[in-house]
Length: 482
Image 1: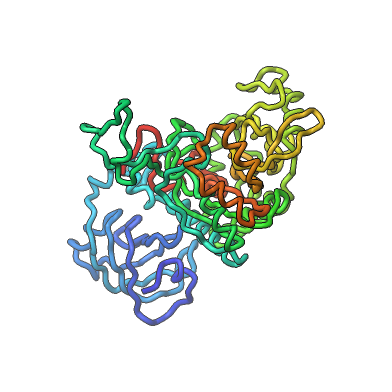
Image 2 (image 1 turned 90 degrees about the vertical axis):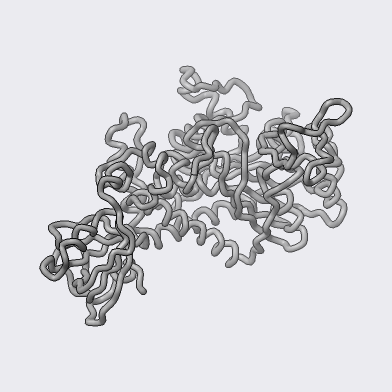
C-alpha cells in the first residue's frame, strides 16, 4: 500500500489501488479530501454519489478513517497533479460530527493553547503534522551526520547517582514508601534501603559518561531524554527534553566550535531539502501570526530566508570579555532597558543579552567563548589567568536569533590535579564522581564536547515560538498530562 505523499508524485495509472487515511473534508457528496499523515497535502478522491448508498455517504465525516479504492487519474482541478477516481469506500472507523465539533479536529482555526490541551489530537492538524514531520527528519539527520563522520552512539544512563551540572535541579527516583520512609539515626532519609542503595535521579546529561567512552572509542555521541527540575514557566524551557551530546578525544575548543557549526548547518540543510513543503507551510503560518504583533517583535526575515542565512554565513566568534564590553556600552544597558543590567565582568548572561548580541549587534549566529570560571561547570578546562588576573574556562555557547543559547559546550579539564581541586572548591564530593576523576590517571588527553537541546533546534527550524509546541507531550511545571 502506497502512502499519499508517494501517490501525489505518481503518474496516472489504470491499476486499481486502495488508499487508507482520515477524512479532512467531504464536499458535495463528491469530493473526499484524504490525509494519512505522510505529507501536508490531501489526496482528492472523487466519487459518483449515485453509485453509493446514502447510509455510507453519511458516514464519510471529518476525522473518520476510510479505505478508498480506485484508479489514479490526471486531476481535473488545479492544485494537484492526480486524483483518485473512486470505485469503493469502506468505513474503517467512524467519527461522530457532534463529537468532532468539540475538538481541534473541527475545521475552524484553533489557538496553540487549545491545541496543547488536546495534545493527543493536535498532530492531526496541519500545523502539528508539519512540525512533527520536520522533527522526525531532524532526528534522522542527527544520526546520519554522526554516523557518516565515524562517531559511535553511546547509550548513557537515564537513571544516575550523579549531577553532571552540579546545579541540583534533578528529579529524584525512589522506591521508598513516602508514607513510611526509613530514616537514619540523625533523622535523614536512609537511602541505603532504597532500590539502588543510594540517592538516585533522572539524568540531566549523559556528558560525563560519554566522556569515558570518547577516551576509548575516540568519538561518540548521545541522543536521548534528559530531565531538569527547574521551575521555569517560559517558552524556552521543558522539564523533559532530548539532548544531543557528542564527545571527541583530542579535540580542543577550536575543533569543538568547528564541529558544532558544521553539525548545525548540516542538519538544517537536510531538513530544508527533505521537508520543503512543510517548512513553506510553517513560514506562511508564521507570517500570518506575526501580522498581529508590533513591528519590533516580528522576525527580521521570513523563515526560509533565516535558515538560508544560517547556512550561508560563518558564525561570529566572540570572547565573553569582548561581549561584556559590547553589552556594557549598548543603548539598552545605558538606558536601563535590560531587566538585568551589565555592570561588570563576571556577570552571567541572560537571554535578553544573548538575543541582543545575535539579533541587534552582530545580526548573525554567535559563538561566545572563554567564560568566567565562577559561572561555569566544574568539568570545563581552566585557562591561564588573563592580564587582569581573571580566571576563565574554555567554554563556548552558540547563540541563535529568536532562541538565545542553542548549544553549550567546552574543552574538558583533562588534568587530574586541576580537576580534583576544582571539585573540592565547588563542593562536589569526590566519592560521588571518583570514576570521572580517576579517568584522568590513565592516558587522559585533550577532549571536548557540547550539548544541543533538540527541541530548541526544532523550534528554530519550524519557526514555532513556544518550545511546548515542538515536542509531542510537553512536561512543564504543574503539567504532566497525557
